[in-house]
Length: 247
Image (cartoon, rainbow, N blue to C red; front, side, top):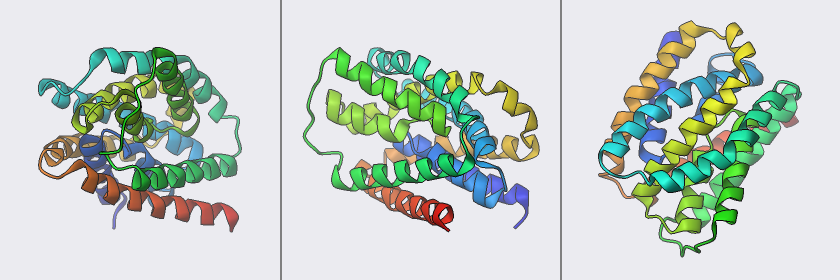
């Protein structure tokens, strides 16, 4: 399969995940860029932020149009994560590739296990603004260091910490992803010069189109079903990357 077709196919899957689940796209984007398209872990993180920023902004518009975004909650999460995202993005370029790959794999596996153990109907526990801000700061740090949007962590946090239902949590997480990814990307502007835009551009374009389809899919399929499918895919990705680091 040609590089262009690989980029388009991977972008479509990433967009579907972002549009339907409000996160997870970058968790798939980074390994796709590394293992299918030959990017280094550092370059994949930067390229992923470019792709996820554009895609999540497009998906956010679609969810906002349907009134499925809680702007105040999302803004609190996003603002709390701005500085950690920027610091994490600056630190990422100084870390060894094996450390980035290993850390990414561990996060993927942990999140997948939590998603399988905590369905969307799990009992929520409402917490105060300090706890919410702390969660947002943690998401920002993960975004900056690993080049992921953090939506795969934001959605469960919004559901379980603030008691949002799945659809508003998905829409609100897209606001968090857009802001955190943009903040992290701004600290990596120097690394963007070496990206292969002939790959990144079609990848991003396919992801944006996929996000619109994913948004429609989220209205037809139960959130718990989508969550389980994504969790199993995430487990496979994490296992592959852990094996690569060990071997």
